[in-house]
Length: 455
Image (cartoon, rainbow, N blue to C red; front, side):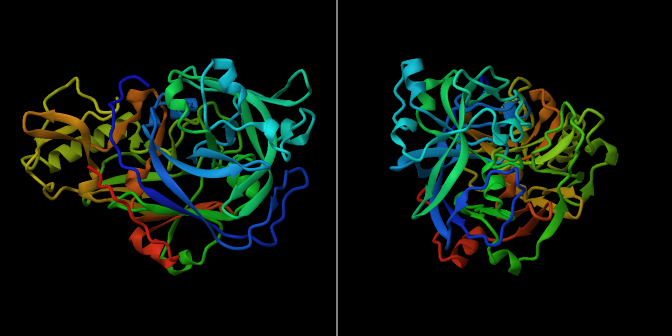
């Protein structure tokens, strides 16, 4: 995507703990993988610098990508092949770049998956219920190819696309195996940056759609906790006992059964009710936070998005109040044409020799039944590689989604640091609790660490 700055981000290790689930039932029409997990499985999950143009984005998430993606390395097929997948809670279908992609574009993709070398690979018939019923949330309906196989086309607002057949295969997480997981084996991909494409093999969809990874595995819940100091953390798939000791505040997931043009029914949607700057509640009608008759204006919690984006009127109110409360404390960057990530136009100049920011007002996002408080030092974000004389540039880490042409509120992971985020799928709610994520990792005997420091 044009207009993004070239970022420099750390590499860090995340931890993913996968817990066994018992007595799980599914509807008769739903595909059921052969789950064989008997004990927690730990996989390293790291941040990778990826061009925002290299990963396709659904239209509602077009500008919400940045060049840091969470990736996990695992093996797929029999015998196993190494793959690296981008974790995306905003997408449904998991997919891998299959080896035909390299041949079609005359490119070398060393991490491509080769289905012809897997004895457990099984394509999905276009007449199967998986193809006819479980692809109903796809923007482009699945179809039959010349071999009567289920063919999927994923088309995105930035003109990138990928297409191929649905299939199932063995996925290996450490020493455990998951049989028959449905994914897209994409043999044709078009994007603007083939060099960046070679850094990953595919994408792991984690939203509420029936073919997402978590839906197929029928996990009752999953949780994650991102460190506020070094961006390490953990992702927990399943019902671990750690969350029992936390005092979680829950907010219900919003569901609208009627299809609406601008409402993503499989996103993790909550109800935003207000915003406070320090203790001052923004003077806004509650109706401004509710989706309209077209579905525009939903609030999505997305770990795949870095920052938080607000609809124009709400963003402008937050911007104005933050300016009032920081008057005389920070020096505003007087450059009307400077807009960070095309959506953040409130920026400040901070002397390079000033090692810490002055005390700043916090920003609290008030949901139905829960509140997410962003401390003042996290409200501002230092823009990498931007200096003015002896000053660095810091911008408010809330953006105006209207400038991106997106009709939605999106809560990004920058504001979820040191918050235990529990996605309780069984009870259709999200739980929040403040916790030191390093301590959460130690609870599981996992030492979270990073050799890097963030700006």
